[in-house]
Image (cartoon, rainbow, N blue to C red):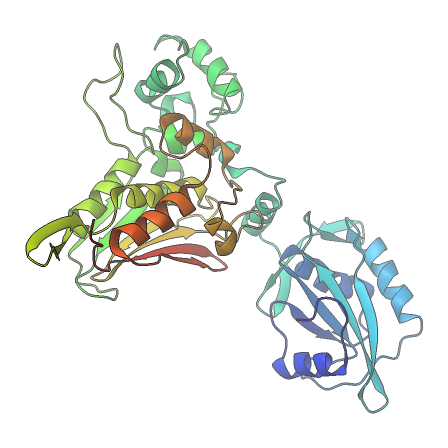
Length: 418
């Protein structure tokens, strides 16, 4: 879509393609709050265009309202909050003697709403329709515009008793190297965890944050069913009911058992280790001939690539997608890891390839960096996933961004000669 001016050919092309996620047709007799609704929904997605003087069926009655530009700008000032200033242009003779007004808004830096009859309403764009945002959709919008952080949101019904003090003691004492309260010092734990945003408040019964439960919860899925990983191994190149194996992986992200004292000495893998283990069991090895005669075996997927991919999926997924887990699938020819939610904060696959960083869940990122699960530099995608895969088996990983999920696809290929 043309981003600066718009001419007759542009408008005719848009009309021929019909309404979509970024294009809306309206007569210029529309009420101001209905125009505001369309502009707000477009701004809350990725921006778009309203063509005034065009019917839903693509016919062109043309514009008739006097002082149309002033009316549009007044609508955007009085009915849209925070107010927006759209691009406006009248394209003449789209059909002989019939003119069309192009009203374009960019993607908002904030979340916009319509103010009408002393009532605030948020709208989102779903296909070619603009509709009132649900609570979940609004929370996701706030998160995308960085007005809301899901990872430090309180989880109703949870409390300190739902956290694993073994893991927490190990984290503070062994990983962070600071003094941790005694196991029976509940008041001390509440203060420490409130200050570190793992619990919301230091009063008795204060709820855990999402990050607290996902990282250190005894049963995170009890409160957050979406916090797990569903892993599958398929015999062929497509999904199949007859799986080789499937595993419902649940539990806290981080492992336990590295510390001393009251922390369990026996290593207990976290969700990350369990998921990596599933991939390793089913990916197997790839054999090739070195020097034309010597058989050499190598893991099908580079271990560091698998680790980085799994950690990224659980650290950066959108936890506002309820009941939608991370999906890890092994096929005969590839590994796919699907993470729920759109890429955050303007990140695109191309920006990921250059190492651009924008964390959706900063608390999860910080704790996983403390443990060494994530690189502090944020260069895991270009340095590990892309470079190591090319070196390991000569294939190029695919980064696929969609409206409701992000997919990392790593092809099996043939192992490169060392």
